[in-house]
Structure formats: structure tokens, C-alpha cells
Amino acid sequence: MNEILTYQSVDDFLKRFNGREFTRYSSIGYVYICEYCNYTKIGSTTQPKKRIKQHELNARVYGNNRIGLISITSFPFKFYKDFERFLHLIYEDRRKRSELFEIKHKQVFPVFVTEYANFLRFLNGDSVANKNQFDSVLYDYVRFTRNNNV
Image (cartoon, rainbow, N blue to C red; front, side, top):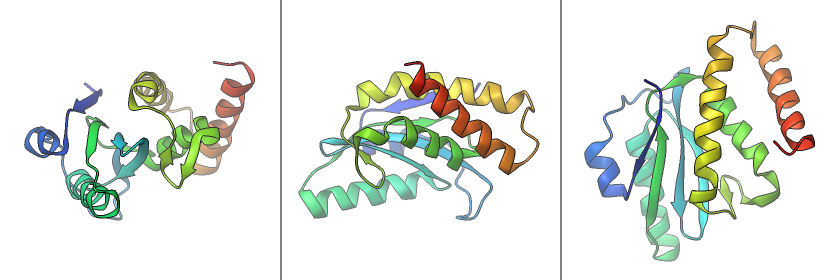
């Protein structure tokens, strides 16, 4: 079953995450959110363990901090970069820089879970014929949710 998995720390993640690692240019990947210093990082990757280790190293080197909670999709999926972009659009007004957002993990998590389920239902409905149509529908959906306070 596709779900969101949550880990308490980088060590916990590295011990228990069983997902596959893919080449950098894979067409499928994972989306994750993690506590990163005083921010939440929303990202995507084809190599989750390598990416989270990199974040942990950066947090220590640049701010003597650690990564906190990590939540990640349990399985890789197509259009993972588009789902990451969708989450970025939802929190655009909270963006600090790049993938860092001034919002708590616990505030993003319920949205991450709900929108991931919606996203998979949308994709499984085969309602998207091509990438251009997908982009159009994605932006329409974001505009709708913003305009209707969904």
C-alpha cells in the first residue's frame, strides 16, 4: 500500500527505510519532508538514503544542527518531481529559500498525507494523457485550492 512513512531521526531512517535506490536520472522517485534546523525541507529524490545523509552533513557543517523528523513516500512513483513542485506551490508564501519553508513538519505532514493520496488517485485514474496536460491540470488544482481555501 502506498503511504507516508515517518522516522524520528536520520539514524532511524537509515536503519529502517527499505526503499530502493535508483539512478539519478530515473523516471520514478520519492518525495519527502524533513525537519531541517528551524525549517521544513520539502524535496524529492531517487536516492533517499544518500540524499538524507547529505542533508544531515549540511545541517551539521553549516549550522551545527541535526535533521529531525523525516517523512517519505513508501514507494517510488512517476511524476514525483511534479508532486514535490505541487507541495512547493502550496507553501510558496512560506518559502525561505529553495526547498526550505518556514513551517513546522507537524503542519506540513497532514497536507503531505492527504495530497499524496489525492495525487495517486488522480494518477491512477489515467486522466493525464501527457506531461503538458499534467502541468496544466496541476496548476489549475493549485489555483482552485488557493482560491477556495481548501
